Length: 307
Image 1 (cartoon, rainbow, N blue to C red):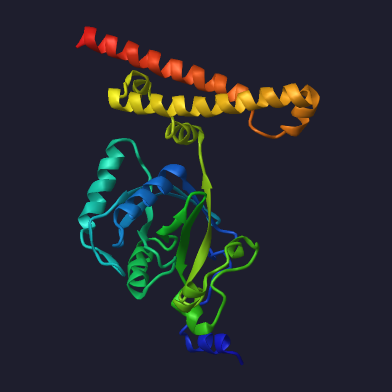
Image 2: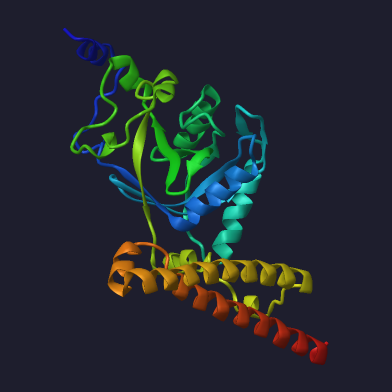
């Protein structure tokens, strides 16, 4: 007789209904670009301390959770732990968001681990237990702002393993897909209780059309950039640098003409294949210098007349 049957006979383990919702390895968390940027910005602003916030979204079904937005929470924090101290703030914030037409619910929380990876500490597990008492599908997102670089964000989502499954040594999720195993766990997370006290949920990112336009405009110059004028000192240094570059290009172009006269045009062209064309770059430098100086003169004239 195995331990599971024994616990069922003793009444310490409840019988699971066939229609009960069982966590699945195919479950995914979709985080919007807006939520990801706000989490990263909040986490980097709090370095070297941990920061905390709440996730706004909805639970689509047993296999899909969407995170649309996040907002930060006031908390007491140190470099190794974080704890919320104002639960009233959450209620007030959700009410204000509902007034603006944001009807998303709180589906979990996020916090940062500066420089030491994604896992849940004992304090984090207790915090997650309080959220799962309100909603069993709540998730805890951990983000590392220091290890995150451009093109790669160190982030993970977790949910606790029920105590009954831990005692009975059962699998916390039914396996119908390899989605839950796509992200290879780190050694630090395994030592800190991953797959023993909590499990990881796969995360994917998605942008809608408005978020895509927002991201494209982040690095775009505004229309006011064209009205800015450099100082006379900056223009003088820039002109001096351009003249030096043009002098070097002119010397290289002269040498190219001399080689062409000695060796012929075809042989010189083959010899210089793949190298910088001094004639072309000299023309570009001349146009650049003329444009910059013309814009500077016109800008000063407009400034003198207008102001």
